[in-house]
Structure formats: C-alpha cells, structure tokens
Image 1: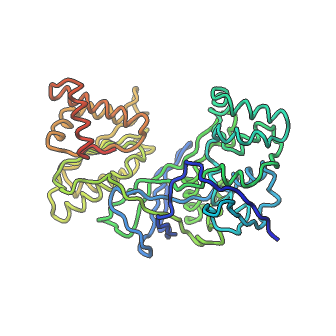
Image 2: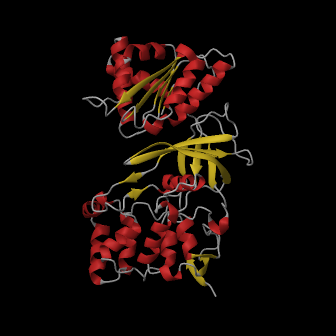
Image 3: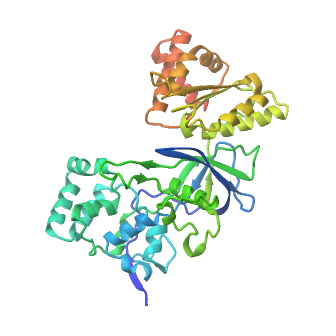
Amino acid sequence: MGELIRGSLGCDGQQEDFENLTESSLDLLSSRELFNVKDRNCLHVEVDVSGSNLSYQTGDHIAIWPTNPGHEVDLFLDVIGLKDKRHTVVSIKALEPTAKVPFPTPTTYDAIVRYHLEIGAPVSRQFVSTLAAFAPNDTARAEMTRLGGDKDYFHEKTGAHYFNISRFLSSVSGGAPWANIPFSAWIEGITKLQPRYYSISSSSLVQPKKISITAVVERQAIPGREEDPFRGVATNYLYALKQKQNGDPNPEAFGQTYEITGPRNKYDGIHVPVHVRHSNFKLPSDPSRPVIMVGPGTGVAPFRAFIQERAKQAEDGATVGPTLLFFGCRKSTEDFVYKEEFESYKKSLGDSFELITAFSREGPKKVYVQHRLRERAQQVNDLLQKKAYFYVCGDAANMAREVNTFLGQIIAEQRGVSEAKAEEIVKGMRAANQYQV
C-alpha cells in the first residue's frame, strides 16, 4: 500500500509556466573540456536535434532540465526524516478540484525530491516563517521565529553560507531531524525544479541539426565548507554526462550521485532533456552590416555562433562587414576558449574579422574587455556611425554595466557631445535593437 498526500499544491509565484513548451530527450553527440584548471573547468557539449521536432536559430537559448544530485537528495531526505522511506510509493491529491499536481503520480518520495523540487535553491525567509511551527524543539523554534521575522538577522546568518533548505534546517536544529513537517508543505513551498538556460554557441546555418553548448562547471568554495563547495545543479549534471560518455577513468564522486538515466530510465543512454527558447539576440539580416561583440569568458558562446555564421556567409560569397570580437579571460594559456577555431575563421573572413583580447592575470595590471573597448574608441565610434550592431553577453551585474557606461563615454568624446546626449544615443540604439544585451 502506498501513502496518500493531500495539499493545496498552489504555485508559490516564482515558477515559470512551462506547460506549452516542447521538452525533448536528445542524444548527447559529443562532450569535451575546453579547459580544466585547479578551480574550474569548461565544457563544450553538442546535442542532436535531428530526431526531434526541435529547431533553432542562431542566437537562441537552449534549456537544460537537470535532475538533483543524489548527494543533495540524500541530505534533504535525511533532514526531513524520510531517508528510510525514500522508495515508498505515494499518491498526490490536490485539495482544490482545479489545482494540478505538478508531476506524475503515483510516485516516490525519492523521485519527487530528485526530479521535481528545487532543493538546491537558496532558502527564503518567507518559507522559514512557515516552517517555524514544525521545529523539532523549542530552541530551534525560537531561532526559526527570529530568522523569519528579522531580515537583517536572517541575512547575517545565511548570506555567506549559500544555505539551501536542508543545510539551513540542519544548521538551525543542530542536526536534529525535521520529521514533523507534512510532505505537502514541501511540495507547496519549494519551487518546481527549473530548467537552466544557455546561449547556443553554434550557427543554425552551419549545423541546423546540432546544438552546441558552452558552460563553465559551477563550483564555488564556501567558508567553513571546504570539502563541500556550492555546485551548480545543471552544469555538474552536464559534467556527469560528459564523464560517463567519455568513460573518464576517475569520475567525480559527486557527479556519480546523479541518476542520469532519469525517472524509470526515461533518458537511458547518454540523453539530456531540453527545450529551445527563441531569442531576439540576432545578427543583422544584412551580413554587410558591421558587428561589435563583447563577450568575456563563456559570454563568448553566442558570438562563436555569430562568427561561425558570418564565416559561412563569406564562404558562400556574401559580402561580410567588419566583425569585431572583444574577448577576455584570465590567461591566454589557461582559459582562452575556441582560440584555434577563431584563427580558422580568420581564413574565411580575412581582414573583416578582428579578435581583440584582454587577459586579466597576465600582466602587472588587470585588463578587462571594457578597457580594450576604450582603447579602440575611434574604431568603435566609426563603426557605430556606420550603423554597426553592438552586442554584450556575460556578467550583467558588472562587466555589462561598465561596457554600457564606457560606450556612452566613447560616443561623447568621439562625437564632441555631452554625456547626456550620448546616453540618449545609447538608449536610441537599444530601442532600435542596434544594441543588444
């Protein structure tokens, strides 16, 4: 006999509606590391869309639907006191007749947590407040009440630790299990496991049936958790697939905890569940228009696709306009992705293609792409006055904002106008889709 779980199953307001999207399980054609250094590594992955109804255009995004790693699933089930019942069959029923259960049922506690709940997300103060009543002891209850009610105290206690819900609860209770929380509260209170989006790094003109993905495997050391870093759920999932596909002799223990064959072996073999999201981040329809691209690190992904496409257009006899790529990384010998490939595109594009590099850890001073942009102020302005398209990808919080500021300064200085007027020009470029981020 299975167990019956009833709940309101209401959306928490943070979930995107994916019901109308077409998710497909695609063959992983190939996977390799573009670089692997002591604290990080970068993957190039290719998936086959030929046997599916998916299609893409250059500049689109691909969504990866990851599963949670077993390492985190075990921790979560242990904290809530269900580790020994993980394979118990449960049926989920909504209390309201119009509510929809957000995953297939009947199922198991393990399957719900592994495939359907965002258990790795940062814990929210609002959710903490709702769980205080179920604390395993008075001390934990008092601490939860304070954390839920005091914003500053909550951030002080959680901010530096990247706590997900299971680590947070274990920390508050000193390891005592939280077995009193009804499972429906987890289904209602934790966001549904979301897809992760990546800029497609291939041209649909060059390889219409094969999508390339470029991604750094996310791994971040946390103070006090030296042996247990924060790990991105999707990039480590891709890394686990890569290690299986290539038969790596020493696969990461963490990666081996992923159930990469999916529920009921749905993704048997080397498959990855994806969908394509169409984007407005596009090359100009006229290949003779100049383009300026700013993309450090894996921000270069869509620009690899753009350059790949313009090289093909040139090979097919089209007149291709000036194509500038500002690319930055730490060291030319460490994390310069697609270096040889960019050199090969030079053969097709000739002098119309120029790669301007910034290596932040090679000289006495840190040099970034925005500094190189300033050095090329006259050339950049000349191309913009010829209606060049300007693109930025990567690090929206810092680099993209600085590039935007520098762009306004370049226009003001080169055209002899006020900074206010230059800002108007930049806004006009954005409105006309001539400046895309």
